[in-house]
Image 1: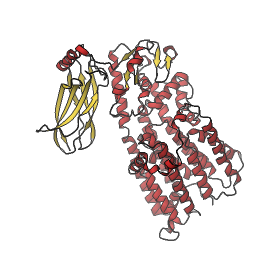
Image 2: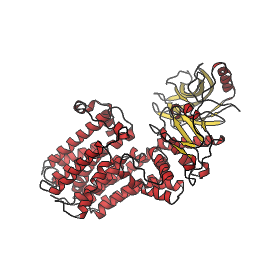
Image 3: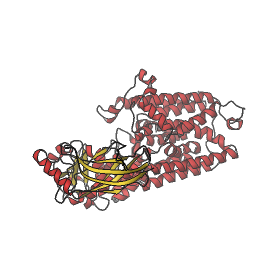
Image 4: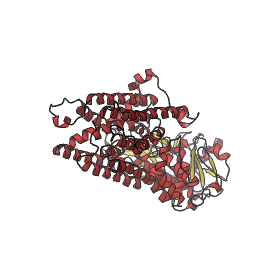
Length: 615
């Protein structure tokens, strides 16, 4: 039975456009946080230097979101405009898929899955926009919107064009065969395509494409290192993995939509016809229990593959991204079958409209709330760039150990991109203001053997004359180390004495609300003695650290552990740094103690205290 493709009410489409507009507004507002960050920063640098597409691991679908920023570089648009174009290109891409599904393919039900996927389920992924998995899922939904509207498939050009998208979908990401296979079987069951011969062509093409894709992965490439084949025993015990436990925790919070959707589909598919909810199940297509079994089987197998391939506790952004195909498997039946049934009655339609509108507004607010670590990363980057203006050099190197030791910012595994992030941010005023900060494990070793006429990236180098002068104008100066080792041996004691005598430490900002047992931050400012350098290097006995602790007033008992952080850079003049705070378990009045300490001998060199209230 071929179901209707459009909704009986107009509000689902208006809601979809509203959600996509909200995502576009957020994409524009947080363009620096999204684009001058991690992979997108490198990709935009690539566009600006080479003026060409950046297609990695044959994931050709990425080219669709690269058109706008590339047009900007070809037209010599300023860096600020390029940031906006690249950030908005993803919103335009998803809105385009939504509009094409609804208007051109005339399939509003599948179209609605697009905004629901990228706002109801995806949240942290919003700030990690470069992943080809959500981009490939959008093409998959476009493909399914066209195919599901025909039963049987008609032999015409539009059908052949849709089938031609299958290799693009499968090449988009190694996991794409799984959601493609789910939708193929789901529609095979829903529309009873037993004798639809042409319908078997796409799945055969998908399997052959996947086989070719995996057989031709270059040795040593990213995918060759990341992809693993789980054993049968590991698959059967995937629920013992920390990643599965992490999934359960996420399903009680950011991914709560997944169990809710599963519950709604379970009620819809398994509720006996004619009992209680007859109005809901009246239009239910035959084979509902079989579709529910397929949904549960797919979900179990998919989670087993993901949790076994990534058994340890995962980065929340990356793990959320991996779970998006599972969300598609839940959203399509909801949009195609359950929501139309709710629209059949005025009361349930109004209730569904109210609930979905409130939920989507809350999700947009939640996505905005998740911006804090990305905002903090941009503030830190700006702070470092402003600090480097006192030096004659324009190229700098610092070590990973001091950059973000407590993961306070969105830098988990992305410190490699600082060279490109700093180039983009520093050139916003003018190409002549270009600066670069490279963060590497062995900073001193790299700085010792570098060429003045090179721009250093984490994997490659670029001669300065090859950088486009309309965007980057770097002089041929040496790289300056921002993290150097302190004096050792007999010079250590006089150095520490000078630091203790004339260094100033100031508490600049404390959060208004300190909650018991919560993690917070405090902003401090260090001012080095005139002509003195506070070394941030850790590989010497006289290394320095900043420590925070809470002291119970007036007993001076220390109820929390001391949190220590290295200096992020060598301090000449003034330097502002954000330090982590671990609030005490019990509310009360405390003294916040911030100190600059030496490692060996262990001593407090400078101290600043302030009375605070923990609630």
